[in-house]
Amino acid sequence: MLRVDHAGEYGANRIYAGQMAVLGRTQSGPLIQHMWDQEKKHLQKFDEILAENRVRPTALLPFWNITGFLLGASTALLGKEGAMACTVAVEESISEHYNSQIRALMETDPEKYKDLLQLITECRDEEMEHHDTGLEQDAQSVPGYWLLKNVIQAGCKAAIYISERI
Figure 1: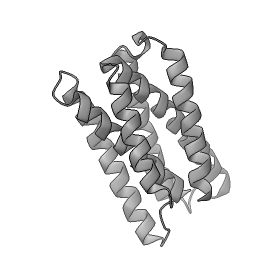
Figure 2 (figure 1 turned 45 degrees about the horizontal axis):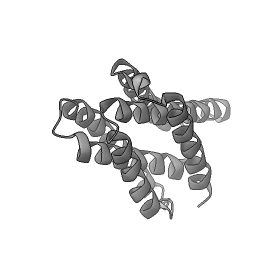
Figure 3 (figure 1 turned 180 degrees about the vertical axis):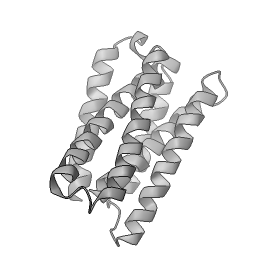
């Protein structure tokens, strides 16, 4: 659970880095930077938890480094709406993943996992804020929105599956 959450936050950081490389000096730059700053805090917390629990990160971090950046940059090349469509797709997938983890921890031992539940809930809530911001910023107006969203979400599901195992 910790490994995959760390990988997800790492990937999100790389996506926002790619978006900032393309849109950082536009009117969208400050908004993207704000969301990225929140993702940096999530990653820092999961870095700390991995170290505390002696859990190694996924072996695929170099791959997620490149693919995350490329996903962020390529969707940002479609403009603000493309970047926001990527944000909506990724954050929706991650929020669903976090919700399933919250349910599992609540069913297992909510008192034992109180701190982890709090962190995952906080991250999930901020991911949903990013999702909603993307919709407010016209994500759905990018040409091919539904196709783009579904392809990105399929990639997210594959990344989650793989990062849980490697």
